[in-house]
Image 1 (cartoon, rainbow, N blue to C red):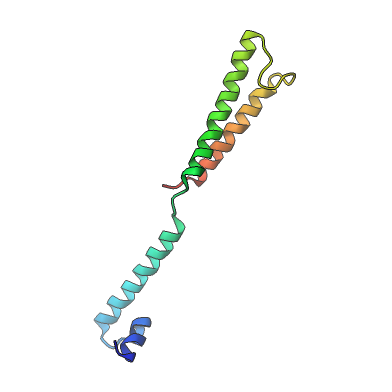
Image 2 (cartoon, helix red, strand yellow):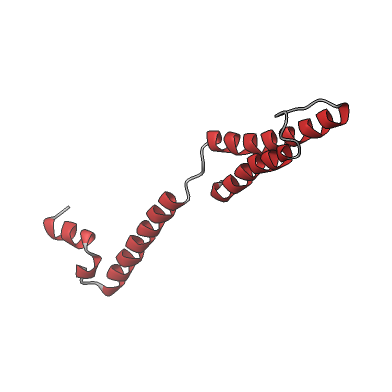
Length: 105
């Protein structure tokens, strides 16, 4: 590749042929857009998904455990706080639901 063609390929506006110049500019814009999209939309790690679903399931298990234990007459999961266990379970599951905003395929 000659020195002048190297300079022209790095700056497509210096290409003398209008059709070749337009094609080079379009190719350069396409390359930039693909790089930008590739960096913006990376899929999330499987660990992130596991933690997200783990929080949702843990909150559900917390609430179900409280209701079943309450029906049997046992104070679980945290004794002496009563119905606040529902709020704790709901809060744990909400962490998982909020994490869903960051989930990308």
